[in-house]
Image (cartoon, rainbow, N blue to C red; front, top):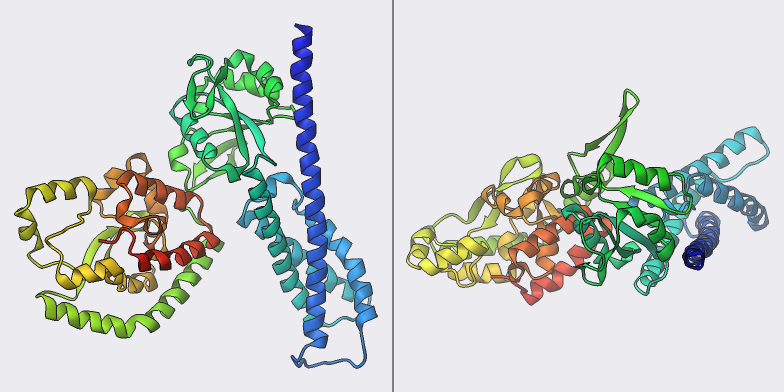
Length: 492
């Protein structure tokens, strides 16, 4: 028994030491990258201010290289310390996307203020204001660029099993399985699941491919030592209050093992949550929208510039399409489809009309197609579609009028698939999440095959987009939309 205890303790300590060695290596690399990028920012600012063809109001005579070299030599360690004070070398803030980049911006802003304030305390310390301003902008850019590169490197290493956090999932109910499946299918998250802990499933029962129940709740201390566990992910709905308190008493102050509690509302958390104290009681509230103020602003800028640019190019083609529609069949050029937007508000989404005005009567003559439409929401050979309409659908040109919906703020260039009110029921527990972001002209569903993707697949892709939104994700989807449209994948 003593030998077994020693063995599991040794395994745990070895895993902890390996984790800290990896983190120290990563932090060292990150500090060196930041120092290099801060220096590059100062240097490029100097080149633009003093060595470029750009003319400034005040242009000093002679070389100032030695003077600014001395300033940079003093400022680089100061800025690095400021980055440290903002938590940019705290592991929990790394690789968190926009949060990390926001901290970089704030730290660079404070560093710039330190330089500005120094000129007031030391009257003889005179530096070019343009150089200070350029340094602020360029250092922010270069540091973000460097950290983006490190992030990509770590994600690549994680796919080969490095820089992983080994976890146990406590619980085997529906929420625990949903969380584990989500983490397991995303190796870039850096989570390696050693197994499940449950009092209600037999040890050895495989619940996910390659992931089984490894023990009971009362053996969790031994399991942590045995598998070198770094974190416990606890499904709060799977445990009683007493069991949760017991886990916290054991691991709540353990510096080697972190506890992460699920909210019990996994299906709702595509929007995120906030924890606030009310009367000294911490309470959690669900955000009503998915995107923050900065994200909304950046996404709106992308929508407006993208939609205006597309309209300038597409307007002559849209006029020709309108004429072709009128000559092909009777009816209006624009079809208005009533769909659901942010907050459940409905609006008319514009499309070029692709169907006959008596399309429902034509469809009624084919009962088997009526059944297929009811089940899948799409028909590959739809008798309601006009000749011009078939061409428009295959080329996705029927959606060009939605650029006006984008300009009106009702839609976004990228977003989840727009749906009607009756379709919301098909999203099940996820249907409320659709109301937290604007529907998109394109999205993951389009670049992944459009109508070739099952309805369940579309729901999964929409939830993936909402949960993992970023401006870079939008740009990636827009880029992937071009070959998807040209190849006509799933367009009918």
